[in-house]
Length: 146
Image (cartoon, rainbow, N blue to C red; front, side, top):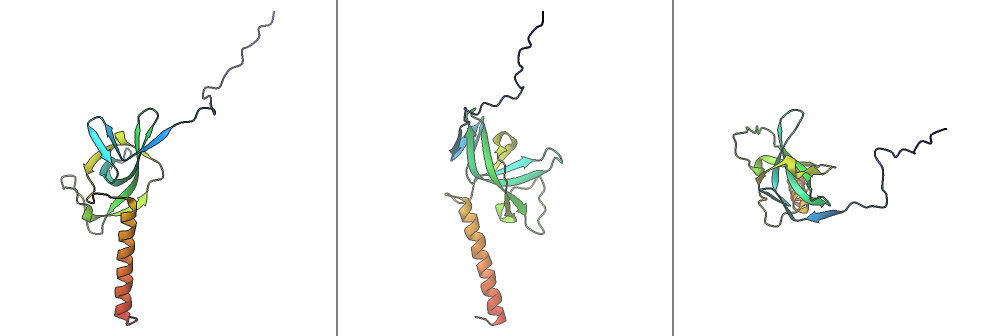
């Protein structure tokens, strides 16, 4: 008598009929830590052990109540060397680039709140445009164009 084999289901079975829910939040609490949009966070790289700073531009929560943040990385200005004993000062950093993937909030350490009460990523872009325009106007004045 021949035994019939039961068809095996793949280990990673895809259920395309079930959608994953993701919610945006203005603030999110994980344990004793409270995060909000605009906060500065410290993220330690698992490969080199170095600390990096970022600013939260969006908070999302999945259906399992796990929090994630989309961030803009902050890089130190020329000539500034951060030591771990130093107090973080946003004036010594500039926005660099937006991270493409969300960072788990469990990997973020709160550093400080935003200096602006209603901070948004647009504030940063507008400030950068203003500075570039001022530099161009001053350069044109020096060259005698204006």
